[in-house]
Length: 469
Ligand SMILES: Cc1cc2nc3c(=O)[nH]c(=O)nc-3n(C[C@H](O)[C@H](O)[C@H](O)COP(=O)(O)OP(=O)(O)OC[C@H]3O[C@@H](n4cnc5c(N)ncnc54)[C@H](O)[C@@H]3O)c2cc1C
Image 1 (cartoon, rainbow, N blue to C red):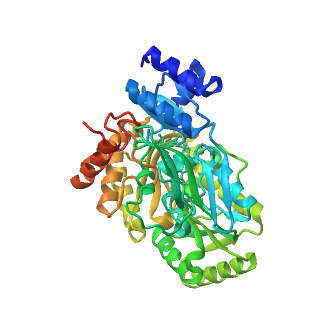
Image 2 (cartoon, rainbow, N blue to C red):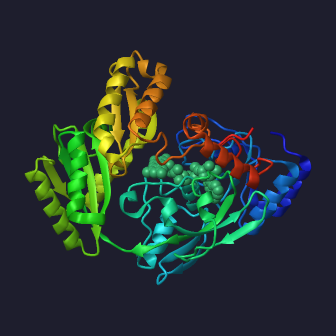
Image 3 (cartoon, rainbow, N blue to C red):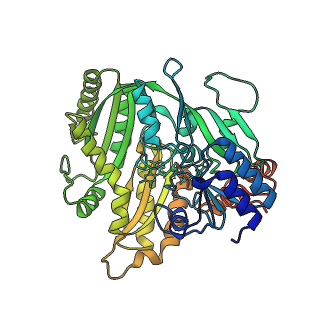
C-alpha cells in the first residue's frame, strides 16, 4: 500500500491541485461500497478532469507497476469498484455532455456523468435515454457500461451494452482509443466497444461514450394483483400479445416485500391492498398517453377474463405512477434496514420462474426453517433479486449461520433451471471464482487471454472478473 515517492510526486503534478485526495475521510469513503458489507482500502484517489490526464496517469502507473481501480458512483454490488489496496481512479470530475445530435439520435457524454444527467440531457433535446434503475442519481455512465447494467426497461430497450454506439477508452498501456462513433452500421472488424461493456474496468478506463437515444414516450402504469407465479408469467405473455414491444417494464413484487417496506417506511401506502401473494408493476409506453392507456385497459380486460389478474389499478397521473415505483425502488433500502438478507441476482428463462421459485424455497426452508423469501424484480427479463431474509429482532438469528448453504441452493437451482448466477450485477471479486468453476473452460481461457494481451502487467482492476495466475 505504500506508493513509491516518485510516483506520488509525478501523479500529483500531472493531476493538479484539485486532481487528487489523500485525506483519511476521502480514502475511507472511496473504499466503502454502497451496501457496506465489506470494507476496502486505498492509498490515493486520482481525480482527473481530462482524458489526457487519465492517459498520462495510466502510463505512470505502468512505469511504477501501481494497480488501479476505476470508480464511478461506487454503487456496484459485486465488489468490483471498491479498491483493495489499488489506487482509486475516480471519474467524478469528467461529467460533461460533449455533444448531442437529435437527428442522429445520439448523445456523447463523459464517463463520470450520472445516469440522471444523461437522461436529462436527452430530455432537453426532446429525446429519451431509456436506461433506468434505482441507483440512477449516483451510478455513472462509465460504471453502467462497465457492469453492463440492466434495470427496469430492458424488456423493450435492452441492457447498457445495447445502448452504446461508441466509446473513448484509455487502454492499460495508456494509449487513447477514440471509438466515439455515432454510427449504427460500421462492420469494420472486431467490435471493440463490446469488449469494455461488462469488463468491470479490467481492460481499460472508459472516459466517454456515445449513446443511443430514442423518441420520447408517454406511459401507462398498472399495479396488478396475481394469485401465483404461473399467472404472472402468463400475464406477461398475454400483455405482450396486446401491446407488443411497447411493454417496457414488467416487475414482480411479493406481498411480503410491501409489508417490509411499510414496516420501515410507515407513510408508504399500498395502492391496492390484497390477500394475494404477488403484484406486478407493468408499464406500456407509446407516443400517445391515451393510446397507451387504451392498450393497457384492453390487456387487463383480457387478463381478468382469463383469470390471470385478480385486481388491477391503472395510475391516473404521473404522481400516482411514481408512488407505485417508489414501493418497488424502496425494497433494496428497506431490506438493509429490516435485518439479515442473503441476496442473489439470478436469471432463468421466464417460463421457468414458477418452478424455480417453488423448488428453491422448499430447499431453503429445509436448511433454515422460517426464512422469509423476498423475490422481486425484473420478471419480464427472467431476472429476480432473490433474498432470504430474517428480521433483526429474531432471537435465534439462524439465517446468517446458513448463508453459504443458502447461496449454494439458490445458485444450484438457477443453474438447474437453465439460468445464470449473475443476471445484471456482474462478477467482481464476489463471484469470480464461483463463475470460473461453472462457465465453460474455453470461455474462461479466452477471457484470460484477452486480459493478458491487453494488460500484461495486470495493473487494471486486478482480481476482478477473471484471475490471471
Ligand atoms: C439501490 C440500487 C439499485 C440498483 N439497481 C440496479 C439495477 O436495477 N440493475 C443493475 O444492473 N444494477 C443495479 N444496481 C447496481 C449498480 O448501480 C450498477 O452496477 C451500476 O452500473 C454501477 O455504476 P457505478 O458508477 O456506481 O459503478 P462502480 O460501482 O463505481 O463501479 C462498477 C464497476 O465499473 C468499473 N468502472 C466504473 N467506472 C469505470 C470507467 N469509467 N471505466 C472503466 N471501469 C469503470 C469499476 O471499476 C467497477 O468494476 C443497483 C445498485 C443500487 C445501490
